[in-house]
Image 1: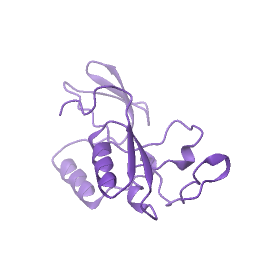
Image 2: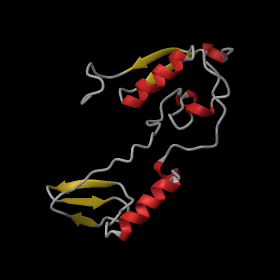
Image 3: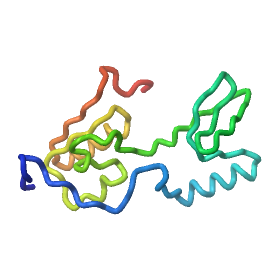
Image 4: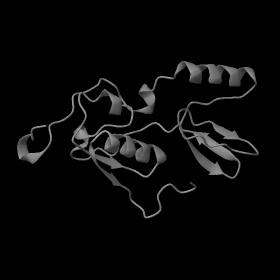
Length: 143
């Protein structure tokens, strides 16, 4: 791939996808699970929240406070490219990885989650020179 000005790789073409939680589309399986959960009496609140005490959270969307004996935190795991730093336009998330127009010669993967190692192994086996960067010494905690 030819280098752009200042020795940088040119930005990848946009796939038209956004990796923000506001633009996520729920898969049919996830929609079915949500519907089944609601039918079973589970209240689902699709909002960011902050923990306010041992048994309560405040929903960011509307400020309501919810309380329960046990709070289950489900993070959702949607990739987000934040903060807005120089060069961000050259980055993609795992959502766009299979939309690349060609197999890259080199790839930098940031993070220590298991999916990062899976992508590193897949692309390395396909012939891409892969570098994996993590911020800590302990990767794949809990495995």
